[in-house]
Length: 142
Image (cartoon, rainbow, N blue to C red; front, side):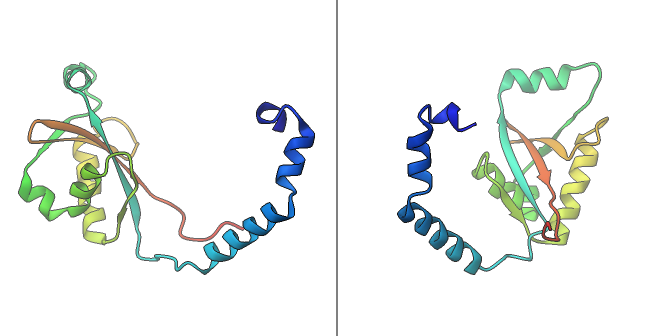
């Protein structure tokens, strides 16, 4: 595998097993282990922009897998995580409250007509977005 990135195995091994590099890795691991864990996060929400052509394709699809939900400012104010996700496209936005999580689940059921996925489509002031709810395990992996 290392041949793909380092054609010279000797250079790869020298760089990776260098004592300074190993000390740096140990320091980074130590700092990471000391960071507090945010146990209030229920899930993450990710938003992506949907261009006009794709939005029309989804809306005009005779199979009707998805439906766009039109949201206004009061809707985004009642579920602030949507506003945050739209402002931070392609980034993980934490969902911390059960009420927000419940509202997102409602939007998924309303928009996602035939799939079991956790994604939904919205329109806010003529801009379309695809949002996906990412849940994760609450127990550490062994």
